[in-house]
Image 1 (cartoon, helix red, strand yellow):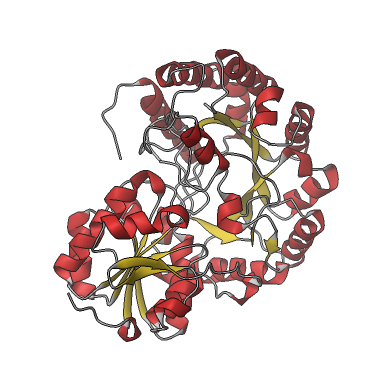
Image 2 (spheres, rainbow, N blue to C red):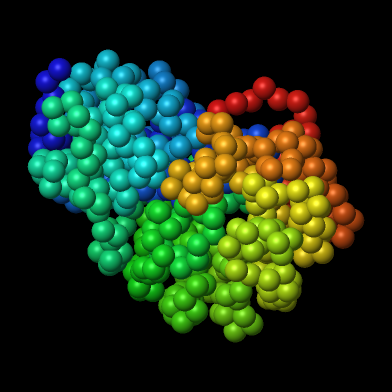
Length: 482
């Protein structure tokens, strides 16, 4: 089949395919549905950044987030028929990779000459198998994809495009890896005018919430985390002024005042985090935001500044209540630091979200119970117990593969156990988690504190809806699958 050369790509369709509702970020690919306490739907930032670069080059773009927008394969076909793209960009995740890539055949059945491109961390390892298995997939992008997609659309010779995997005379080839983007300020702001911004909301209020990519990279090396493969171990931070300018655009152009500051650890560079807060305070932004942090990077002065700048919540990766498990997962924190971090958050009126990872290969019933007991002692405002998922590219994937624990990649990433541990079966871990959630959230002290945070009738309704959805996902029989 002859293909139109990439140089003629004047229209590009960038999509989250209609193949399951996941957080389709390179670092986070968790399934949104069965088991999770609260839905966490985020806008498609990877393809929004790419679309902004493409538009700056004069290329017309269309973004579709089908799982969030309620789109189906029929919707996908209709968009292809109407938009007639020269290039299709699929943002893929490992848990749904086969379904994601199967859409390439559908695309070519509607637009035979369309160039199909898949991006996502899955292709750091499995680019060649994807190209061999799916003949309708033309290219796979490895690593940070913005400039790779731009060069491909502009017709640069394939062998000269770093981070690109392709076929040469039917044989998969890969160009050299693309270096990380050193100066994140050089990227244009994401193409939010192409997004349905009202669909991405703050869970407790239902107000629109935008994601602001504040930095990339993390110096820590947790065995289960994709960050090392996705963003590297060196922090690359945007300038405070650029971050503030993007926030102002969201406020003025899209009427968004709630934000998720997306960085692998917002507070890892204390002086930079303080500088961001000073910028927001000086510009009198009148916004609210949440971020992710480590428990050993918080202190009184920093949290005071964050609160003044509009921070209302912080996600803390505690991961386990077992010192043995913390050591094996290479987390590098202590339980005392976790207790102090939650105490400081409460002192400054910042909601604490604590996250724990269950089901690593060394997990026993004893270590799980240690985690559950510690989470109740920690007494954060919200807790989520995730199951470890062996994403390709992580040390965990290598370990469970080498020890025969992994029997394929199940679709319900992080919402259900992906493998038996050396000591526990998957069904045992699910049962223990369900009991632990009930014991945490039904404590009278926790219920009273939650009720005290409710300020309006609409917010009360929202909390009841969230609680009911969490109850249905965790305790009622369901046939729901991705």
